[in-house]
Length: 145
Image (cartoon, rainbow, N blue to C red; front, side):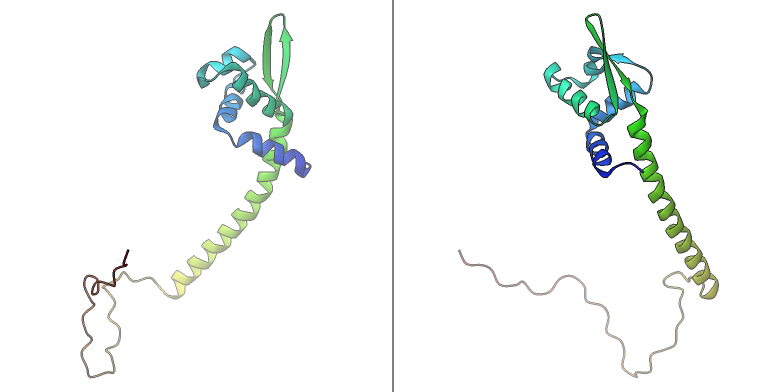
């Protein structure tokens, strides 16, 4: 399992929609910084900060080819995050399966009846049950200014 500091950086890097968009674009193959920045409508210096965060988290690598800087996905950090998430996916699946078994057992023991179709025992009290209140109560006190 990956180091907590590494996972912190990866999840923080992925917490921003712009950076997730860059990762999504890079899943289709390497791209230049200009190509990556174009759909995000921000200044190049501002966009470069996003690339730095992704690079620091180990999610992408940059390589200079002449005057062009190309970025490529570095899947190692994503794999570490996926393994961490898979561990908790197993945990939650086990919990949800147990809940499903419990609810199935409860339905077998005590079948659900829709509201209004219940014909429970009559009240032991001879008095009639008052109807439920409708609307709200009397107005409350007003605050003086």
